[in-house]
Length: 114
Picture 1 (cartoon, helix red, strand yellow):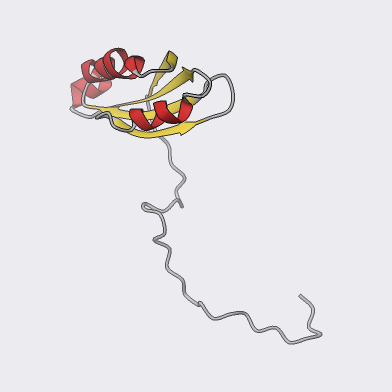
Picture 2: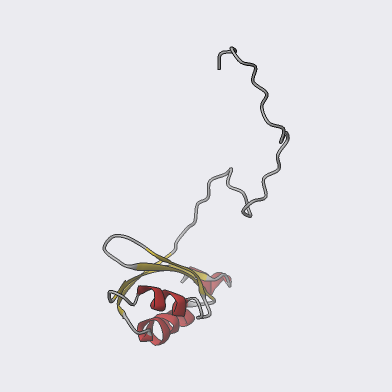
């Protein structure tokens, strides 16, 4: 695996089918596991997705087989390992870090065309 050779982490997205009524409880439990960065409920073929980051493939395997699949309500998982990531060049590094040049309200005289 690429991550094992370079010392980088293994990133993956794990899609999950969850029994009806247990989605919220299952997703909250997933956030407690080391390596799980984010969890979201989704619409479509699967009920939830987890963004994960592990030190190597063995930790990812343990996360899936020993932890995620042991959560009550999770009936199926499908794992997609990240090859490359792309990011919009103008996306802020951190949320809410935009700087405003002018925060004064726009003054509009009546009768002026927009």
